[in-house]
Amino acid sequence: MSDFIVEALDQFDSIVIYSGLPLNAYPIKLPSTVIIKELAVYKESKLTWFFRKWKEVAHLQKYKTFYGMNDALTSGYPKESSLRAILIKFIYLITQKIHSDTSIVFIEKLQFASFSSNKITKSYLKMLKEDAPSYVFFTHQRPSYLAPFLYATIKSKIAVSSFIFSWDNLSSKGRMLGTFDSFLVWSDLMKKELLYFYPKVKASKVKVVGTPQFEPYIMDKYQMDKEIFYTNFNLNKSKKIICYSCADSSIGANDALVIRSIIMAIRENNMNTTCQLLVRTSPAEGPARFDVLKNEFPEIIWNYPKWVLTRENHAESWSQRIPSDQDIKDLRAILQYADLNVNMCSTMSLDFMLFDKPVINTVFGNDENGLYDDQRFLNYDHYKKVIDSGAVTIATTKEELIAQINEALDKSSLRSQQRKNLVKLQISHDLKGTSKRIAQTLSDLNG
Image (cartoon, rainbow, N blue to C red):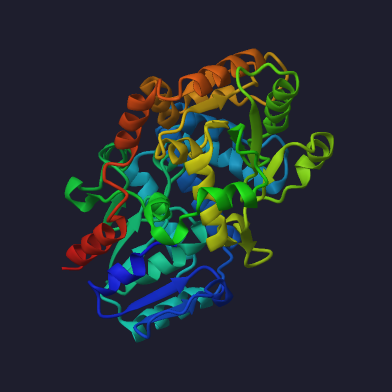
């Protein structure tokens, strides 16, 4: 979706995309110096799963003083008594005491050894021998099904780096898929986190480049005229736009409650100005869970992300969903022309702040009120920084939410400087030039 391939071809003679997506996911015409090779889908054995799980749990145990790590650790503890559950409980027991970096690296070696003779691993080794790339770059540091390709890269003695995919990956997720030579990160903050959670990594091997996640927001090809936006979405030009962006069903159990609270306040004229509600659902799922709301409140405008599931029955199906160009245009237009965003502690907060739009985070649930406990996310290390910045307001009840909506619509610039400060903290470089910066950094690492 960005200009990365174009910029990378200025730095490298040719590019091979080793794709975790099927070939039909690439409708674009690429230069002859860019080749796409679809990777065979690897499915880990029970033994490999055991070592991977051990490595991930040990990492969480080591850093469980961080709320997000401990939350992942607690939620991952099985309640049943199947054979797999018993094995996980055993891993939890052992790693309570043994979770040093040295022990984690040792378990990783056992994990890699367990699939070293796998036919898919051998096919990766053969592919790398034939192509002989001078450098390999992973665009995501976590997917476990790519571990055999990392092993093949290391075994082939090819320099390898990874991009840290998202802003919460280091402080609330388990161990990354393996050991890389170098890392590309969003910000100085993320570099600091990486060096803390992976103390064997040298500071000189971590490069701050910004993130391509938001680069389409400054590219001309994704710009939509305001008149077209209002027409396409059937919006009323005389009303302000509140956008509620949903989480997926696994953590967005209170989405419907928040949506209902907003639309009822609009119906009952509890807003200081005339408003309309635009709801963007999560691209990780279909819209079916909101059918009741859609029928009950026909005035809600719905944006169902135009993402395509490129492959069924994948170990990590979320990784097989890709956005269309039209969806990027739709999303950018929503960010640019909406007056306010409401979401449950999502990265979407940053998306809207890039356009200097007010953001409200809703957390209606806790242990006491019987709703899904989304208030716990406020304690996650990466999100505490958002709260402490003063860039967002936090609504724990319907009443707080409506009051904050009114304030945000009346005084949209109230937290403007705090929003800009937070964006600078999370993304240390301008969006413009991100692809060029990444390509140049990879070239420098390639030597």
